[in-house]
Image (tube, rainbow over all chains, first blue to last red; front, side):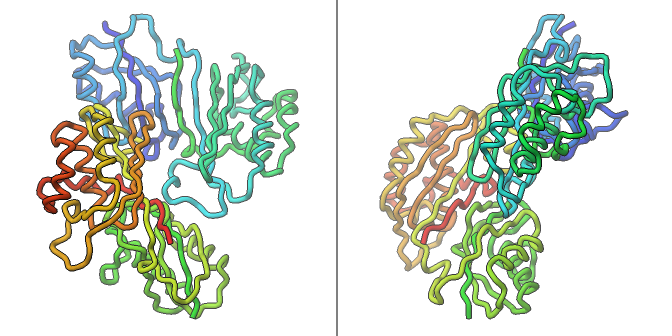
Length: 245
Length: 245
């Protein structure tokens, strides 16, 4: 059996998220698996690096699958990009050692979140940014990002119920970039809990609006409850940029 | 009568272009005019800085109109952005002297054109870039841009039939920026003929592909015929960035 790694770019707008639901072609996983079946004749299950939510985009999602197909990597790339819908693109096909597993072997990920900060909305970025009308205090937000960086128990920044698995993660960096009214927050870490980026981002925004003090972050880390954190901001402004192995 | 200047951002995908066609709401002008009628009760004709083609986007199109309405600029901005579809945003409302005319007073414009240069297509930029699969020679393209810069008769780079009006224009600069696989060409000039950016861009691309020699530009300027220039590249990768007064 060959072990094939796919790197995948997608516009998540039309989809219910990564994870297959029944036979639906409305998920990224489902759509790729049905196209792989067309290509190989085999029923193939792909393993993603992790799920993305309904509406979330990816610049570099990663998945792997096993196959006996003897197509070349170039043939696979061209077949897939021909038959997948045009809001989904395979950017790379790689041959991997048998033991490579797209989820277990993840060393880290980068996500980006986009905030459109202006009284006036945006037409061109409306599908890929979250509109915040009120002025944001960038310095306070930077401070919040510093506090979030490092190794912490992020349970209070997730939608998880109690779990036996460790919820300690390390955020290496949160980079903030400004392009006119568009703010880009890049989160680099060794792993992210369910909804973690969107809840951290919601908290950072409420700090920027002055609705929450920066110190709330220390409290959430200490008390380990979601309650005090900000809202879960919308999925359509979130991008999975890259998965590190 | 008050003279109001609007700055307009739009995602051109759903529209037949700027210019009103009958009563259709499928044009940018038509849609803004019908919303202005809702706002003021008056039948208003807006004067755009110039047309944009079907599918072309704008970051900063400009138009003006006369009205007797006594709404404040803030009220106009908020009414328009509430009732316009969300692929159209008024970013600024300004009060102008009576003689201001959005077309006659134009001093210059900036357009951007986006080329996705990779064997593999793009999912996320598919609505705003033109996909060129074959490798482009960036140095040759830069050279082509240099040759196009300056004051020339651009009739050979337009879809115009013979005309008595001057077709001499000055291109101040063509800036080329690269963001990964995405190439951005910014054209700054005192005026652009019909289809001029798209034909220049088509020519620059064919030069980058080695299909046309760089010298073709001198020939087109000398012979003043469209024939030798490149194809008119698609409208969906073109943005009107700014209008200068």
